[in-house]
Image 1: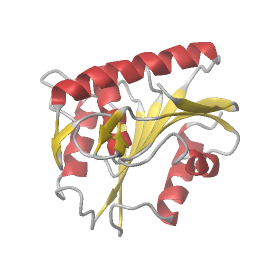
Image 2: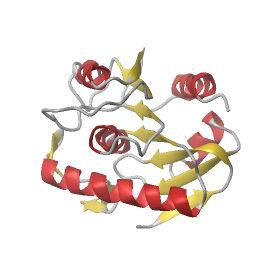
Image 3: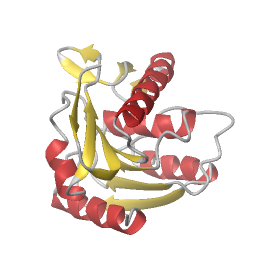
Image 4: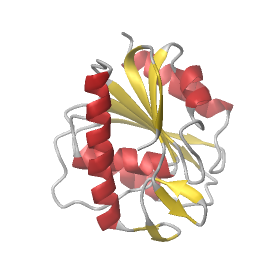
Length: 198
């Protein structure tokens, strides 16, 4: 897996780009929302019509769940290996769109890998009959009221799923579309400062 790593303080940020991005896309965001933090930014390995993603989809908004499950475990293994290699005690996912969806999948399928997550424009990645015990793990969902990429109920459904698993979820609605803006940066930075003070 190709990736970019920037050494820094704990907790580290796991930066997961959206469709069409790469390992460089979210580095500036990571630097703005957690100055000085270690940054681990992998590149999605699925090529969809020339655009990189972290897992396959069958159509817009329709995920290939088998591929999602397999690639979630591969990504979690990679993150665990890098955390051990670079002596990173805690890592918090910061995912956008497709990257937010695989971050949510990691919370559900591999609890214990992530210390928390900032999910920007995320959907419910998959339905699981027996959610794990997320035991108060802090999660921030930054949703948009005018998001043209998903149905309006998706962020609320994801928040309910994670709350049901025991996560400490903050769902924050922006008066925005699918793209990110300055408010997202401010909200993510403040949330990280509150929930990961050291």
